[in-house]
Amino acid sequence: MFRAAKQNRIFQDVVDQVQEIILSGKLKAGEMLPPERELKDMMQVSRGTLREALRVLEHKGLIEIKLGVGGGAVVKDITFDQVNESLALLIRYQKISLRHLAEFREGVEGRIASLAAERAKPDDIVKLNDLLIEAKKYSEKGNDFQNEFIEVDKKVHLTLAEITENPVYVSLHHTVHDNIDRYYENFLNMKERELKENYQDLCEIVKAVENKDSDEARDLARKHILRFNHYMVRREVN
Amino acid sequence: MFRAAKQNRIFQDVVDQVQEIILSGKLKAGEMLPPERELKDMMQVSRGTLREALRVLEHKGLIEIKLGVGGGAVVKDITFDQVNESLALLIRYQKISLRHLAEFREGVEGRIASLAAERAKPDDIVKLNDLLIEAKKYSEKGNDFQNEFIEVDKKVHLTLAEITENPVYVSLHHTVHDNIDRYYENFLNMKERELKENYQDLCEIVKAVENKDSDEARDLARKHILRFNHYMVRREVN
DNA sequence: TCGATCCTAATGGTTTAACCATTATAATTA
DNA sequence: TAATTATAATGGTTAAACCATTAGGATCGA
Image 1 (cartoon, helix red, strand yellow):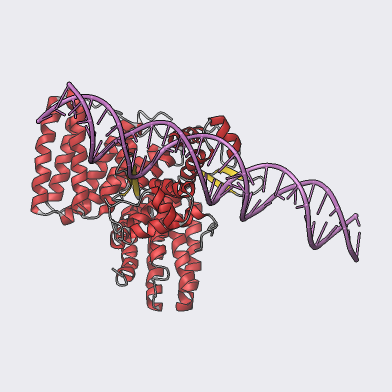
Image 2 (cartoon, rainbow over the protein chains, first blue to last red):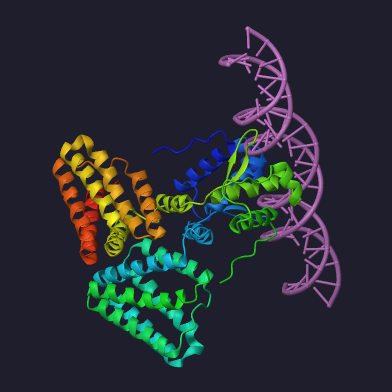
């Protein structure tokens, strides 16, 4: 209900004030805070204290600080970067294993596919089929184009997430991929047969979405991710 | 693939070094960093620079700083707090609406229930049934015990999340609840009839888990959350 | 005139030294 | 023995100076 009121720290008050100004829209993304030397006078704190506050705001992803003339603190358009970073820390601290993350992803992608099946518009179906054509190309070219295939695979999943029109899913897609990629760069080494299996998966998922068969889409997407997870887990380093 | 190498900043190097020491296990939760005045000498930086680094580490959730004699920077056991905070920011910045978050929760709780159905041990079933008895009590006492009922409801969901043995789900439970609660404290105002409906939901979910019927558990959990979401969305303030 | 080079000033990054505020512990006193 | 007070360790804050980076203007050469 309540959180600790460690409020005797001046820099925290500075953080809160600036954050409030940004979140309330008085300063929009791209606009700048006054230079440190002016701001410290306005807020009647020392430059050191102000800078501690700026460090926190920077780390929160609310501002970005540039050097030189015309530099200074620019208000940032907030992204999921901080969520990703925190998750990455949890993984490194071994509060989460990649197996857990992979299992989570399995559920999420299933849900995304099923929502996409309910919500896909004709345009979306076209886009998905275009991606399939690309995927087919790479899957037939064999191992040398493995990375390209994986990129297209990612794009299919991203497109499905976008079709849900729920930004939580879009962001989660990035979060999960960022964190899986970070530790498993090129973890995949699929044989040509496996590339083709994956291509088939994608085709079936898209077909289910096209048919608005949400249960089928969910089950197929989960199976598809499960296959990926197997490649991954068989290489897990723990 | 690569991230910007803004590495001319000394405090960043301090952050990286200390973080590495903590994550590598050389300093464990509960242990302390040297006092600022010693650490600054060891790392050959000024106290101001060191303090900027400590601010960042504190905000990352890696250390906690206490005042007074015997105070200083204590290594923290890392939690999901930072993830929650970042998500809360995204919500306030209106990158995510509560409707989106609620929809996401619906999917997650469904998945949790279905995994729980596959993994519940006899002990778990006992625990769930105990909670149901408590829930029944409050649901019969009517509106005055609405908050108590909601607490038990939360506990049921938390227990289901724990049964999955996947910490991602446990943490997500907290994240979602923290963020929903923050903006909808007491958002619920259920009539007695609604309390009883919710109690029935819980009973059915637990029964499905007991029967290891994962599809049924999933569908029931989703319907249950959907009901909650209706109470919430009908009060949404946007 | 154009382009290259250099200079200037704005702005963040860092240092130093001092002092303030909080608090656990030891010393003192009733 | 218990309450009170003093001490010192430790983080929090301030001030003033200097360093490093950089955009843009000034200068100079062709």
